[in-house]
Length: 452
Image (spheres, rainbow, N blue to C red):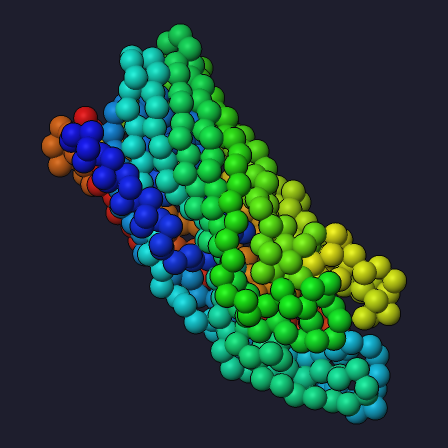
């Protein structure tokens, strides 16, 4: 492939990634895996890199994969639903401050937007026998929901019961967050048994929110005009990812990587929603793992990943912070939506354990399978606001394969199923009501890989 053709392919892949609609990802709003080969093993691969999207997991692995390009896409289908049950009714004449009590339904609504196309692209070239330079293009999608219909009941602040349309009483409700990463990566071997690498991560994200107008109307936002229904806003940022791989014995290799927190420019159109005036950074992550050669033709992989959602106030701050907002009778305006201590989604940090298995058979076939387990980041106290972002997935099951087409090219396939997971808890604005979040997921993808 000529240099011109490679540059054209890179430009097209980046354009496709930017234009692609976001989906709701699987470990919080992080994908369960990035390269197609790793996706076949639930994302495990920090100690075993196999294609030019390796930098998304471990930059050091790029020097291990040789000169190659990988391009493809996945179809992703998340099915998200909430059930709001139980009611004490919103009594007339009962004045308890802004919106309180506030009831959703009772009703059951499934989110629209269940089918998404997620592209991926990687390119790597060996500079010499011991160093490489490449670019990996990948993304996270999250918080993509759109709940049509339904009603909400609330106190109008004067003691009158009011019913309005929409999950949160202001029409169709939902959010859409997409994140794109372009990672130029340099990697080098140190001796025969070790490699290190670093990626400069260029991050782009876009976001919109719908149907949250009542929170502004009742004084629960520091900037009601930049709270909701303002279309898409975008932001950019920069971070670093570091990685290492080492061969401990002929049968065992290990790896580790760390991605810094990525400081993003604020979403000005949503300065009244996210804490600290629209700040929505990307949390730091760390992964360690090993690859064990179980037989001459098979390997077992074990990765442990940590996602530090506590790095980001907009994601980590609890909804209960809103109780200190003056509209609820508190004295701290910074606790209102958009404030420096503004209410958020209440997510906890996640630790995910990934177990993968890979084995080679005759005819140029390689087969993969995997299972991962993590505890979803949403406490039961945070279910109401997380109707917008029901990141309840905990377990993933995957299968995949590679078929060598010839000595220079291959096709890769991966399938993921995440069985239905749930989280339930009281509505914090009316404890008589219970809210349950539900989601299950399917993903099917393929890439073409070419060596040069």
